[in-house]
Image (cartoon, rainbow, N blue to C red; front, side, top):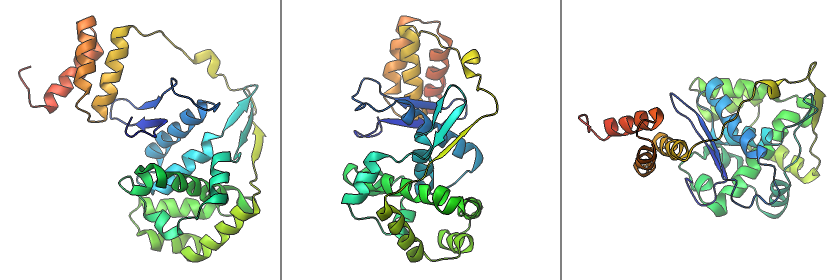
Length: 258
């Protein structure tokens, strides 16, 4: 885990992307797919939008984490997240200007007592921009992301896209939260999704398990990757993945002969 409060995370890489979650922990009855959909949204954003603000990245991931599908066809999006709704009732919101300045090094992103309101407010703002007023701000949101990804300064991009100040938007968001009515979207695909026919799974050997854990940590630039890769190679010296990952680790360590 990057930190103690992490329930799951997305680890990108040039060769492979990992979505991680801990099924051993108490998920308090939550559907583990909420974590999977949250992290998968990060992958989609990374592949399509490039450099986006942290609140946008996490807010959209939280928005899509509630995605559900029944009968491989009927979908629901935008369900309110109870923990966020309750928190927004009880805690003071961050000023919108502060929210927009949060990055992955900020205390509001990393410290447990601060990150909860960051995630809740990012979700609420995204829910508002996506669904309030019958989705009238969706086009503005798209323009905002396009401008920020192109390198436009945050405040300039906001003003050009939404035609209003941070303070004015914050007032609208507060009113949206206080109404405590979060619309949802329901719909259905024209044909059933056929992923069950193509999805494949396999049981990993202990050597493969250790190799995957080692490779995940290698992609996170964590030194303890070597411990797991050594375990994998001790169990199966010919395991290609473990050898490849160990070789990459040794390249990074400057051990060219090894």
